[in-house]
Image (cartoon, rainbow, N blue to C red; front, top):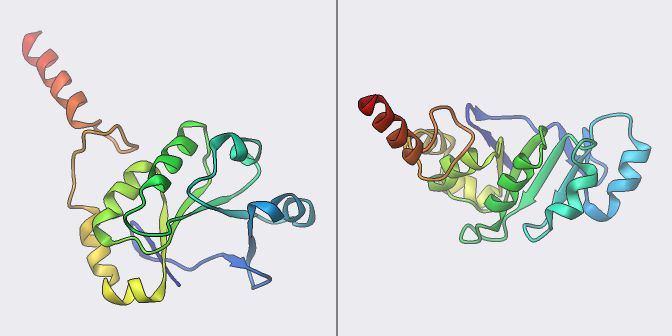
Length: 163
């Protein structure tokens, strides 16, 4: 497992199945983990889970890891954006075989980190991910970066020249 953030490789402070670190559990074990743990708890969910299912836990979990079964399945991006809009302020992690070209989109949707399987990480080194993070400086979608999207920038420019 390789964990990549916008600044490079990161250590994972969460552990699955009794490993060392804060517990990272599935949705079915979340209530028990929250009751049993005095430390941060993370939950790993499928990209098909609804925001309504996660809403009661948004203020109680430190990490939500969203599984991507394939790089071509973008439902996790939508879920991340909805979680941020719902007020989740913890760490959002994309888990699965994403590709470096998707990194800037993941960051714009609200993800903080990407957890790659070793095979994916071997094909695309961290330097490639970091380079890809800065390739797209403007988007049409409203993201979480300063400066707004292309449409907002155009609207502001028209107001500035018209006024």
